[in-house]
Amino acid sequence: MRNRKNFKLKPHDIKRNGIVTFTDGTNIDLPANQKTCEAYGYKYINGICCAYVPSAQIRENANDETFLNNGSGNEINKSKGTLITGNSHFIDNAFGCFVAGQNNVISPDDPVYGGLQPNDAEAYVNNASIIGGSYGKATASGQVVIGGGKGDSSDSHGHHQLSIYTLGLQNVGRTGSVMVLQGDSDRAEEIYLPLGSMNVFEINLTGICTGGTSGTVGHYKSLVQTGTCLVSSSAETENVYDAGTTTTTSSNGTTGTVTVGLSDNRFRIEITGVNNVNCSWFAVVKIFTNKISVTF
Image (tube, rainbow, N blue to C red; front, side, top):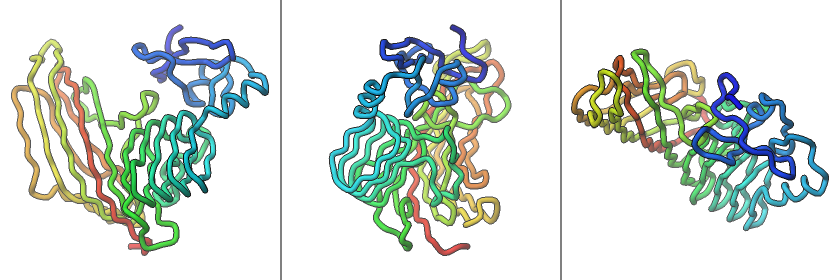
């Protein structure tokens, strides 16, 4: 079967219980989100893509395997393949995630982050982890969080925390292309900073030429940068990006141009490539967040 337009995944197998697994051309037995599942004419039931409506027993067994809860006082909504340890967590639409510590949240719908994550059936978080601490908040696929404790309000999840993201991009053209999070092969997610926050960031980025008619395999570029991002309580105004004075780059040959900055409250790394030069780009971004409840 061919891929549907604008979809990276296509069906790979239909199990005996009716569950449909997908492939990206390299990996097999991948789960699909609701949009991808229904694009191929299947039904999306309890977070699972199905070729037909499974029996009540199959649905019950599938729900029993959606998570492992090792703790108390945890509120768990729809999730699958998620490991939960510790107490008083809130988990919603989490797939392949891990959470430890206390009073942490994994959820794509986050009012603390200004509601900029989608609040609909498509909303989910893939492969994110909160590896310790308390009052941490993971809202993006592939995000790794250490909670820094309670902030200055009663609803203070995500106010004080360290977040680590991995981003990638392949074979960009002359126009700028934004690096996207690597926690989900089916979507192109970006980094959203919380409204009303001060953030210190650290970027470690590498790009290496993989070929092309004008490219030389092994040409490279690296960038190490630390700086700050001040995000106002209204995402569209008074945001400040300051790269500081600690940017370090090295390069050999022809790769592309790297631009870092803010677009509303999206933290972006943009790559402008060179004609007929193919490169593989990868970045690890650490963001130290201090959010306050007072508006500014």
